[in-house]
Amino acid sequence: MPTVVEFQVNSTFNIVAPDSVRVSGYPVPGPLTPGVDPDYRFRSSLLSDVLVWQRGLLAGEHHDGLWLTGPMGSGKSSLIRQVAARLNLPLIEVNAKTRLEVADLVGYRTALGGDVLFQDGPLTRALREGAWLLLDEVDLMEPGELVGLNTVLDGGPLVIPDNGG
Image 1 (cartoon, rainbow, N blue to C red):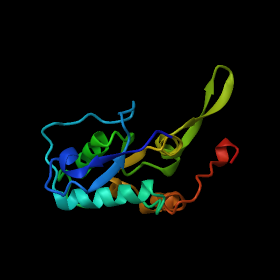
Image 2 (tube, rainbow, N blue to C red):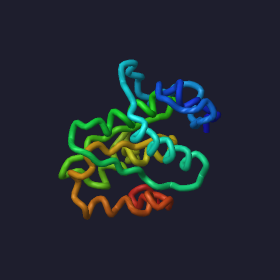
Image 3 (spheres, rainbow, N blue to C red):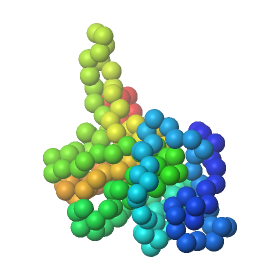
Image 4 (cartoon, rainbow, N blue to C red):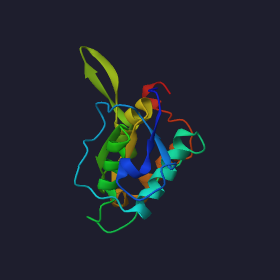
């Protein structure tokens, strides 16, 4: 796991906040870190929810997911991308759709070089690499499929029967 550093919220996100208000991230971006949009403007009220959630994740206080609501195109996904970018956090993004299944997120078996191997899906990769997983427009997924994420969202293990458990 990379070294964690503290960022001043006011200078990192260009908002009004005391110098003492800080949030943790990584010192340098990794291959999964989104690019910074220098023209992006943060709204303090939305940013604070994401930063409090991030603080709790890194402190081990919770393993909860974060659900952002609002109309399509209102900036929910760009907020997550830009917070991850400025804190140098890895992010894996998946565009949800009606036919997206939890199995698609977990992974699949594939033939590779004469062997049958398990290939990580975006969820498995995010868990292995400590990345945020952004399920963009997740409300398009079938509710019965989303139930398959409950154990992971509750901080439990991801058990993959197709990969020997």
